[in-house]
Picture (spheres, rainbow, N blue to C red):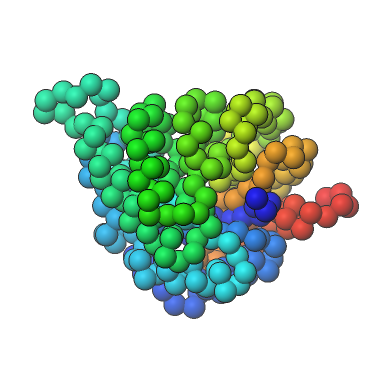
Length: 313
């Protein structure tokens, strides 16, 4: 598998967000400035709460199929590989990792089989798009921590997806969960969200290496990143973290992360989080405290990493 030098582009874009020339230009700038060879597109499905069993991917919260196909083709025309990662979120703001139901069916309570039925419809819709439009990888979910124990349902879903899609299949587990997924054998590529504290990368990579050795599968980080917010280098997964703007702390986190990854030959790449469809102006970068790296010092770290240069940062 070619090393993945990736970015997640415009994740969870709402309806009409990807229309017009701006998103096309933004993706072009991303490739030119970072040296990416891969882009992950993330159509978002929504459910009302973690205990809802209906996933909607046709509302204003989700990019249209036309928009998605346009971005796939635009990326491919630029020479980028496209990975598709349809991901569900809760409209009440609860993180998707907490989607959960009773293990045993209880009358008048929501049930796992109801949710997986809707989730399969959601995933298969995009698996068909991935197949018809030449996407090189399909990622069947992201950070579904409480749902991961439902091994039978995941195996069935992946088997159904293979009936529609014939490229590589992965699943994106959450940080610290790599060793808890029991069904890695049925995907082609293991992936996870690499949001580890700046000084803990080597410890976590040593732990993940045991999982990779056990299953003999390629591995990459389907997400990874850090906000330009004071304190984020120790809590990079906390998108609600409050603090002052700190561009240098973000840069330092990226330096430690990429140097740790470079030491492990089994890490087959990373797709950092994330790049916007509409970029803020360069003058606004110094006042921007979220995950985006455009015109921030961290951008140069990623450029160096993706360029695979021998000189030091």
